[in-house]
Image: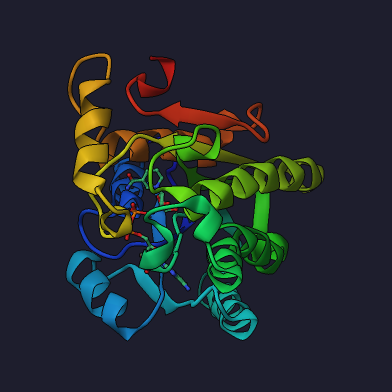
Length: 250
Ligand code: NAD
C-alpha cells in the first residue's frame, strides 16, 4: 500500500474505459484518497456512477484559467495539501485527426496544443502551492509524438509538445520536491481515441505488435501511474516511460 495516506488528484475520467479510471483504480488499490476533476456536467454524471461516496468530485475545464483556479481553491479548502496529480486530458477537433497533416487549420492546431499540452502547465501552476514534498505529477502521451502515425496528425504534434513540457516542468518542480513524468501508453479503445480516423485499424495494428500479442490495459497503465506519482519514484524526473507492451520496440 505505497499510497496509503496520500491524496491524489485524478483529471480525465470520462467513463470506465478511460485511462484515468485505470489510474484511479490502481491508486485506490494502493491506499490513496482520490479527488477527481471532470470537464463538464455530462462527465460529472458518468463519473458519479463510478466514484465512491467518499471521493471528492470537482469541476475543472482546462480550457479556462478561472475554472482551473477555482478547482484548486476548492481542493485546497476541502482536503488541504495533495501528494500527486494525474493529467489524462487531450482534445482535438475530429477533422484534424484525418488526412493530410499539411491541412491542419491554425485554430485546430492551437486548440489541440492548448487542451493537450499547455493545460499541464496551467494545472501544475495552480497545484504547485498544494503539493507535499515527494509528490508526483504524471501525464499521458502516445508514441505519435516521436513517429508519424497515420491520422494521429495534430495530436502527435501536441504530444511532442507535451513531452517537452514534461522535461521543462520537471526541471522546475524538482526544486520544490515534485517529480514530473509522462507515460507513453499503447493504443487502447477509449472515447478520445475514437476521434482518430481509422482508429480500429490503429488499435488492431498496435495489438498485433505487442510482445505477447495482447493489448495493454488501462489497469496496466494505471499501475505504472501509481508508482510514478508515489515517493517510490522521486528519482525518476522528466522521463517518458513506455507502457505499451513493447510496441515501440518493433
Ligand atoms: P478519454 O476520452 O477517456 O479521456 C480524455 C479526457 O479528457 C476526458 O475525460 C475528457 O473529459 C478530458 N478533457 C478533454 N477536454 C477537456 C477540458 N477542456 N477540460 C477538462 N478535461 C478535458 O480518453 P483516454 O484515451 O483515456 O485519454 C486520456 C489521455 O491518455 C489523453 O491524454 C490521451 O491522449 C492519452 N492517451 C491515450 C491513448 C489511447 O490509446 N487511448 C494512448 C496514449 C495516450
